[in-house]
Image (cartoon, rainbow, N blue to C red; front, side, top):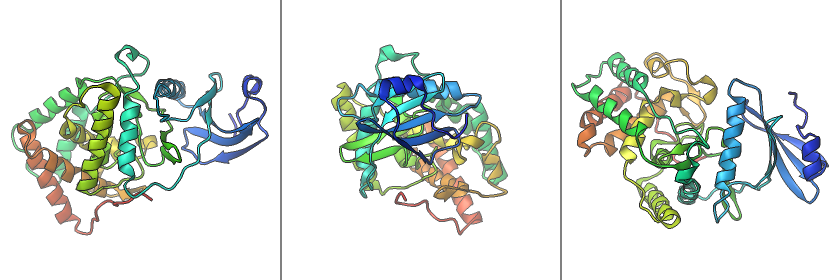
Length: 342
């Protein structure tokens, strides 16, 4: 597939012929254009070749159709598809500069998104996959490499954590990468885009993004505690309004799970291969708004605080506190992650 606009005869018959097109920036995994169609502007997205291209396309289409159930729109309208070319034609939306307290509206929209899936949707999308034993071994290996003692019982605590995350109840529609840049702040509210990693599971795994610092994202931010509390309250309030149920507790587990994921220190193209936590003692690297060590120090601090009163993670709390202290002592010039999105 080349860089020419992917808009075949079937799409032309359904939507009309594009009068003009302009290529937009996108990840290497897709090609995106803005086009002018009879009566409307649209965005054309084509999932490019790769070993998982068909799966990414299927996930995005399925997620957009589930999300379209929301009474208040939270995704662009899906105007048409061409499965043979893995093309989606979407409503074009104008993005505005987010407000300083943008995470509050973001959290509300995220709850609306999560609430659109139902128990009977099981199988339409894969279940969310959390960390595993290899992630635990990598994390504990980092502690050893940095000469931070690991108390007896910590490995068992982490095993239990991984099991709890694997068994976490819930059928929420999870975006998969709900990052700054994948949220469009429009005149009529926030809409999410780019659902290639969508899945079903516990919404807490993505509510945790606010505290843990958007772990799968190029744009890491750390909000002040009062703002975080407002955002988390907004999520829980909207979830209750949309589902009639209370959101479960479990943010400490969710944040600790993201801490274990070494793959959450690099962009997607470099995941599922190297042990990225094992690289931390030897080198640092920049991705987006922060370096890997900055990201890790932030996550260690969050997990240390959240687990301080959790008996099931008491050893993890001490270990994360000690690891953070060791990193800041060894690399004293490390700066906190940004407080504002670009």
